Length: 168
Image (tube, rainbow, N blue to C red; front, side, top):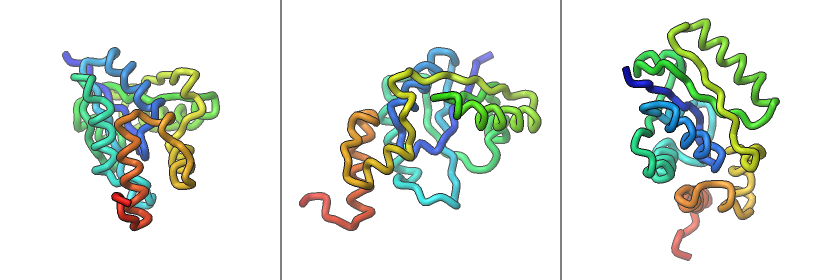
């Protein structure tokens, strides 16, 4: 039986920490779906299509990883895909409490799906998508916080958001 896992998130934008977790999870499972959760109540920096573009480009070296979007309850999506595991990244102890609660709720909804926690590398422990968004929207250099494939996607989104001509 193939071991399929889901790594969910908003990935707005994908960071070096996300890619670290994806790379390590891809070694633990036969197949990994990076699942972009769609939340209509949030105003993201990147559209779902831009996040898919960024993640596909950043994970092209991983043959067992695919990128999809989903909406609704994560555990229902995992069951629909016949995944037995949900992968969650942890940066610090502050992440654990929230992630533990989510894992317990998911277990209550279905005991057929387990949550696996992966600690990010220490050098990425301070990174979050919200920090990258803030640095990017305030004109800071975000290039060292995201994979090289993601930086141009963010730059295009910032230009489109401001309505500025990208050529000049």
